[in-house]
Image (cartoon, rainbow, N blue to C red; front, top):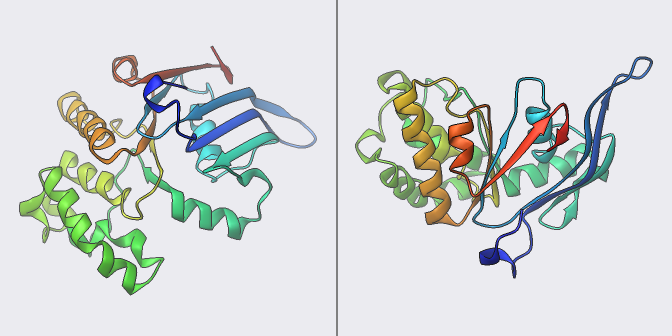
Length: 231
């Protein structure tokens, strides 16, 4: 996935010759020779029917699953051969995640929820990132909701908080798995526009898995998966 705007920059993530096979006695191959790269500031959409392998690609890029063959390069490091502790460190330092459901903690307010990933790095990280998270919440229109609990927010507002939370550790790449799938059409488009805006303003790379061709068409690049193969 190359553009002239990013031709002098190194990819933030690459998949090289990725296969994924489940099972030992009875083997089922779900990915076949997947090759892709994502550059800084790009918004990439993976689109395909249910069962096409979209989420498996996302999980391998997110270091939540391992490939059967091939290389997973994150910031130039081959994560496919690392142990789980080293993979967890890479995941914490370089990746942010947005899911279909927001997974906000009900006992914490909006600002506290966005700072949760910083807890893994300790109190100093939370203190250092507090003002940046407030600024991001202001950017997404949540400045007057910092002290609200999740149950006081609409579905779209909750997903905005989840998007800001994905930026807490200042990652290189945001992985979004059907982030609009649990929202009505109008709110879904608003959330999609928000992610595009954050991509532009922060320079972060975004990879979104979606079954919605309309959203995919608005991304910088589209990757179409059919039966585990890039078309």
